[in-house]
Length: 77
Figure 1 (cartoon, rainbow, N blue to C red):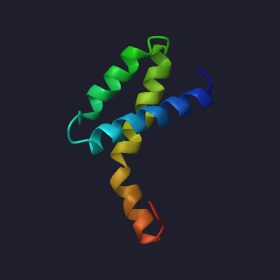
Figure 2 (figure 1 turned 60 degrees about the vertical axis):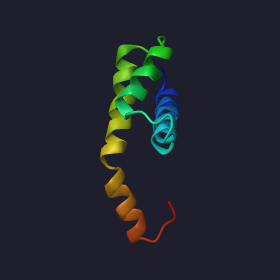
Figure 3 (figure 1 turned 135 degrees about the vertical axis):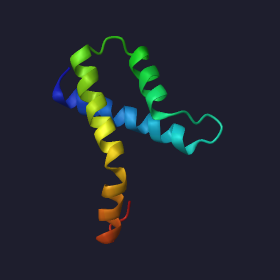
Figure 4 (figure 1 turned 90 degrees about the horizontal axis):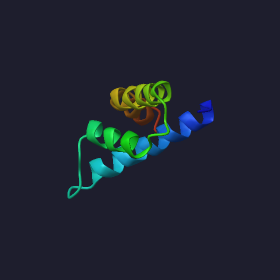
């Protein structure tokens, strides 16, 4: 996978996680969404999977901090 493809996969996975989190009927934990995402895309190798997962979990871990900074600078989400 190219670096650009890794970023695209990260964005796609984050979009799926957020859409599941916002949907009360089909809401699922982020780890289950990620597992289903990677199972459906067997062509993604182990190293690429690891890189995408690290980016996604890093963003989710820092989400609160990032939104705090955005609100502090009065930037729209």
